[in-house]
Length: 391
Image (cartoon, rainbow, N blue to C red):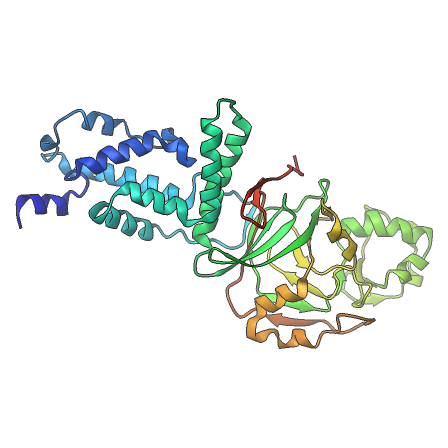
């Protein structure tokens, strides 16, 4: 092996001065790709480029090569995964960031093409990131500065980078709160999209990640204590008929059904309520015909609803935090796949009463993301700015 080939093998960066110049330029121009130059300690590159390239291969070559490699890896990981990435109140599902994949891409482009080509490849891989960066460049080049829009586009570009990376090779459900919309992705393709109803500002839906493992047909609704004591109890105290009209069971601390007529309702209050309300299954049930649970500390879940008219509203923020689905049957069939035969027997139209609940297992990995992104996309893929409903 000649000295040149050996240097290229042992010092892939130091033996390619043009690549180092490109890296230095890319880091200085980081804001144009929605990153910050100050993320990267690249001052030593500026100094290095002031000296002759033939002097780079010396006693400190390995240390210098390692520093450049680490710097480049950080930059291309940020282009791949985003920086900053979304922050969630609860992470019930941890997504893998495939750093080795980035390293292999970087090595390949360094040796066979150019790192500028790799930047273009990564920025164009996600249709969302591509659209946001094009709009960001227009805002940055505009004579009329709009720092708020630039900051919003910059943040969303990085969040969509992360989303693009983690949705590869799997089905992924994403609920964007400001958009009041659910999307199911298979890679870059949206295979299902529907409206959802989310938490009102006083009871916001939480941002989280989770894994869906079951679908419940004909669910009971175990009324949360806050709703039971603040909303239902006052009505029942006015008139016991409200209890029966709401198709409720009253459970004691041992989860046993007790006769509502034997209860001194006037003695109960927000601070003293040793019971649980459980709503029977049926057309009246608040959860409708389907519930899709997932582990989280906020008692959130996806579900059908008896209030279909709310989906016609442009601002769909009416719930106590849970997510109501416009088309729960179609979504459940997508989750269950070949195991969805039980869905075909559902009596969706017409009256149905007190049907036993049935749990069906989701036999595949089905991660869920609930996030808060003020940028989304219309049917044509154009950027849409959303109202900050939980501001």
